[in-house]
Every structure is written in structure tokens, then in C-alpha cells.
Amino acid sequence: MKVTGEQEHWTLEQAREFFASSRRNKFSARRTTINGLHFDSQKEAHRYLILKDEERCGLVTHLERQVKFPIEVNRVFICNYIADFVYNRRTVENGRQIITRVIEDTKGFRTPLYKLKRQLMKAVYKVTIYET
Image 1 (cartoon, rainbow, N blue to C red):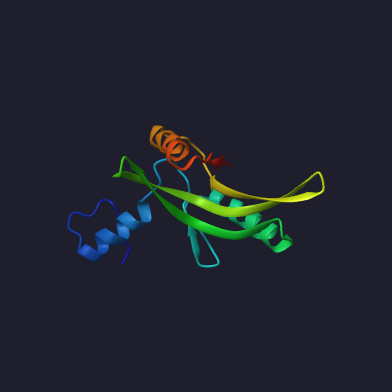
Image 2: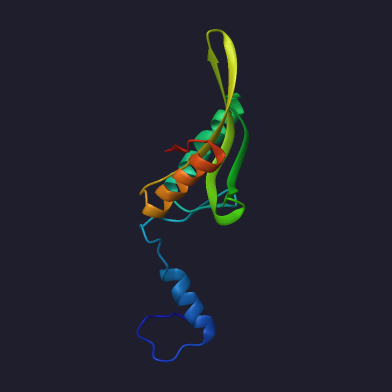
């Protein structure tokens, strides 16, 4: 049965179908699925494919998605920061191999809440979030 916004009486199933199909991200990002993995935006999905290619080449290891970092101050839980990607990046400097742990967030728009969490991550974990 086709569901439209002009109906007066809906079943619960019809309402769910209508709102699920019309739900949009507040920043107009399109949710994307690749190989059964769900991403909040096409940009995040594209970045994942790049990182997977780098992982196949050996430039990136231990690639993880949606890694949760609890943020506590003075033993009081404040919030969680969820990184889009966490991985080890291999580079060579002066003939020496260097492995750097990277916490990455794919952003189209930097909200005030994100900026606050980024600063909390720097204060609590002493890390800088790499933004793409």
C-alpha cells in the first residue's frame, strides 16, 4: 500500500514506513551502505573505501570504525566521543618506519557540540583528531 502525507488515519505500520522513508539527516547527508556496513554520509563511506585501499597496500593497519571514547573529568562521566575511524598509519622518515595512531572524523559541518568534544578529547586523551 502506498503511503502519502495526506492520509488522515494511518496504521502504525504505515506511519513507520512514511517516516522512515522521509527521514533526512539534519545536514542533508545521505546515509550510505557499502558491503553491509552503514555510514552516516557518502563522504564517510568514500573515506572508508580509501582507508581500506591503504590497508590493502600496508599503509594503514588495525582499521576500526565507530570507536567510542568515554570522556570523564575528575572521575565524572561527561559524554562519549565516537570517532568515525581509528587506525595505525605507517610512514617513513629519515629511513625509519614510524607508526602513528590516528583518530579520524569525517566532517561536512563542524557543529559546536563536535568542537567541544574535540577539545575534550585533546584535554582528556592528549590527542588531536584528524579531520577529513
